[in-house]
Amino acid sequence: MTLQVRLTIAMVAVITTVVTVSAVIAVSSAKSELVEGVDNFLIDRAENIVNLPTSIDARAFGQRDEKKLGLSEFLAEPDAVTQIVDPKGQVIFAYPTSLPLVDAELEIATQKAENLRGETRIRESTVAGIDYRILSKPLPRGGLLQIGRDLSEVRDALSGMIRTFLILGVIGIALAILLAWLLASRLAKPIKRLSKTAEHIARTQELSAYIDANDGDREVRRLAESFNVMLRALLTSREQQKRLVSDASHELRTPLTSVRTNIELLAKVKTIEEKDRESIINDLKTEIEELSLLVDEIVDLATSTGYKSENFANEDLSALAQQVADKFYRRSGRVIDVLNSGETLRSMQKVAMERAISNLVDNAIKFSPEGTNIVISVEGGTVSVRDFGLGIREDDKNQLFERFFRSVDSRNLPGSGIGLSIVEEIILRHDGRVFVESPQDGPGTIVGFTI
Image (cartoon, rainbow, N blue to C red; front, side):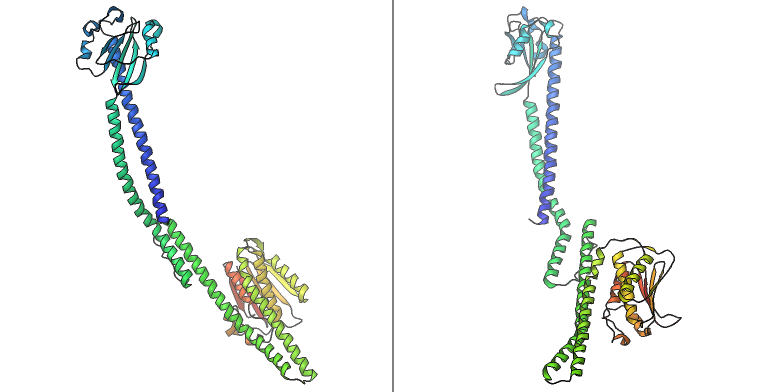
């Protein structure tokens, strides 16, 4: 079933349940009120008869004479059945019809009144197909008074109420179905549009087909916004993937061409001097190392998004910089100085930040002549790494953090130009910025970031 059908069924089920329960409660309450009214009538009638000035003595009469019993005023237009039973359990008066006796009522009739103080019973019985509510009350001088009231009016009132509820219920449920369908259609409309958009994207791969997030209720708008955020992320990821593939293919083309040319040369030239052969083999080794390095950096770039899931925690930038300096000293033997100032405690992703500082130091080592130091300066939330190489051209500063960018002066050095782009990606995730400067007091370049 569609969402609209399920919503309609759910709403109609709820409305039907509420209407049914309300109707049952209303009918039960009405029945209780009507029966209570009948019981009050029976009690009042019995009290009036028992308290007549000419007190009824069921033992003194052997004939059914209402005048002698003093009942004339209650029997002119009878609205209830009146029956008197003598102490022997015999019905001596019944008008306009007789009522059935049960054993409990015969016991009341045959016992003395003083033993039955307050003994009044009410029950229901059917006489000639008519339901009666029957009250049995002992008489002061013995015997039993019974008053019966026809329940037809109560039954008719309840039947009429039930019919009314059924008619109104059917009409109400029909309206509920219509309104529920319209409401479900309105609620499901953004969902349908979302589904169609998803199907359209799956079919056409058009990730720019955004949904209008201003339509619908708050939850639907949030769903649409989340869907659009997902589309933007997918579109960005696709663009990055295309750019990565394009850049990687461009960077791989040169070393692959060189390797192929050298191999073809070795295959074609059957006699080659040892010096030339050694030169070609060395060139092949260099190009293969470049290929390996390039592949490693491309893998690093592809996996750098894994840092996004790392949790943020308060860490000391200066301590982290010192760890990186110690690590590269052990690897390269180069002296790396760490200068600290200010409060360097910051909220960061520790592993990602260590990677960013490491890339800066690795880049500085590549461009620093042997015997020169590398300087890491940590001032508050700013980390800068200085090398003492040839420096960087002014025109190249704006492109330094672009993927695969390599200045003219660095084309003969190892690397592919990916390391600094990873640094920028990490720092942007920390709401920071990257920078590149030329020092005022000597040669080299300062590359760093602020978070």
